[in-house]
Structure formats: C-alpha cells, structure tokens
Image 1 (cartoon, rainbow, N blue to C red):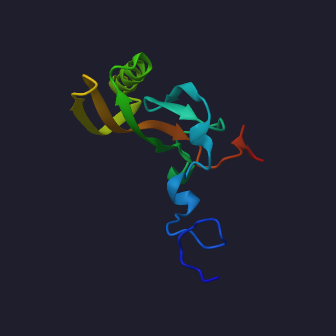
Image 2: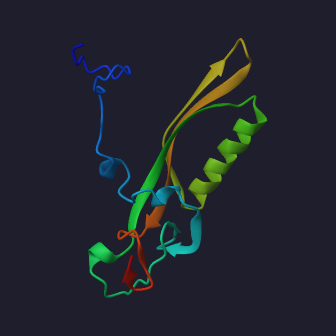
Length: 135
C-alpha cells in the first residue's frame, strides 16, 4: 500500500500535522481550571509558581489562548446562554472574539451565529516548577 497522505487509518500519514508545542506552548496547562488572582489581569492556569519581579523574562508567566470555533443557534436557550457567557468573558478581558457572522435562517425563523473566539490566560513557562524547585 502506498503512502497517499490521506490519514484514513490505513497506516498512511495524515495530510496535515503541526508540532504540539506550536499549538499549545503551555504543555496542557491551558486546560486546567483558571486561578485568581491571575497575572496582569488574566486568569492563571496551570502549575503555580513563585514569581519574582526580577526573574528573567523566560521565567515570567507567559500569555496564551485556547481557540474556539462555534456555530450557535439563537433559538436554542443553551446556545444563547453560551453566547452571553462568551461576551461576558470578553467584557471582563478574559476572551477575544476574532470573527462573528450572523445569518438569518428563514425556514427556521432564527439566527445562527458563527464565532471564532479565544479565552486568554497566563501560564507557568516551566511546567513542574513549584515553590522554587523543579520537579
């Protein structure tokens, strides 16, 4: 069987792949629960750290984001609540919306909203660094 690059599960390589460190430089910390107070107005996610003002830049908390793509149906109460929550996060400075497109669906007499947004957070650049020691 030849490698056609279609990633269809027959041993072929996928057409598209990206290094995980380019997608998530926090090494999974972005999926952890946010902690407050955060860093520079952002929630902190990940392994806690003892930060000192004179630490070199590469040891200071870093900023990252989790990207989301949503299509929300405004006739659905849960989708309306999700939309309100996303906007509240944006107003609070914890999220940014990069695309919002609205489309009227006449046969359903409702609006659909396409959103591309990101929740922004700070994280420890040295995962495993706690209380001044490296694990």
